[in-house]
Length: 368
Length: 186
Image 1 (tube, chains in turn purple, green):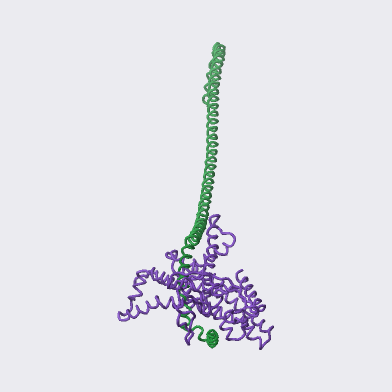
Image 2 (cartoon, each protein chain N blue to C red):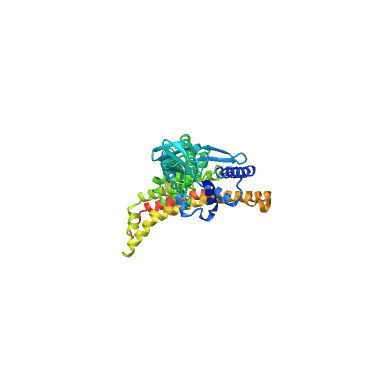
């Protein structure tokens, strides 16, 4: 069902592109130019992989109007907490529009909010396009990604609370709960139990189930033309991996620490070296592999889908509009189907590896 | 002016360094990280309390119920088998008992018949013996009676003969003679 929906969305997206001559990027094209050169496409894609402060739907290039809705900006500045709607920036993303709020001047450059130093009236840049008279502020805005997370959280909450309630009526759920229940059982029986063990898995089910469905829903949301790229934000995957790391490091058994720090059955000289390797492995490498895998997979997926959709523009001169559109449609459809699989796969792998690491940490070894 | 320069600069950037380490670090938004941590924590806590715990409990309960039901079904089956075995045993016992009872009855019948037969025989024999005895005694009495009558008659005849004969001496001698002769013939 979900797959069908996503395919529909992709079709919808393609139709969108055909009828609107491609997405517009307002701040870069104030004159209403279409995006038709490879560099512009690259720039456009990289822009859309990033988080943004307003929910951009599409832009009518002919008139230059943006169809989007603003999201609240919440920033912690030198003058304290400031809140306003992102519409105050007027879709500017290059530091042109300065918002004055209670004595601080704020501007947005590349989806980041900067505070201008006192006295400055406009942003000046150095050679590498770094602002010289402004610094980043702690940005707690409800950005598009935060909005996506809240949406995913809400969907998850509503779905599973309904499932939990349905058990009060009888032992077998009805309606959509019938779809959700096997997934819960799958996570419990095929991910948590085999890796953590029958005795200890229960304590970690809250985290594992939440993370599994959270990632999966966000990955699927990312396939819709709403253009969420939450699991492709490095900050999000860092946070998820950190949660896993904190959980397994803090629930590590005595045996785990004994084996990590002073490996038995190994020559004593080697033990400190092994301890360092093991520690680095558990504290850095394992969380890093988790966060990079999810981030890279999701980002690459978005990148490929968008690039394939852009084929209809880049290949228009070589093949003509009909053929390039057809090719783009077929290829984008194909990759989108794979991305639906990847959306599940990455959620599965993240949960699987998390439970594997937790299982390593809580395992009680037989003494040799 | 500045914006144009920026645009140019951006356009010069190649795809290969789109995700260089620097951009990656630059993309890391502390605010997003904080928001994600807070939201994830809240979602985990909420989901655990309102969804996962009741769901997992319900699943455990259901699975426990199914396991119990299966076990009790198995038990019922065993009990059924035991019951059937019991029934079979009882049936066998009952059959054996009936057999025995029939045998006993038959034996008793035979015995009764036997007893009756012997008793009847005994009575018959006794009756026959009694009859024989009374016949014998009757016979004896009759013979004795006959004997005495014959003796009386003989005595009377003898008396009469003697009376007549003894009147004639010759005849007396003759008689003695014949009588002696008869004796010697014996």
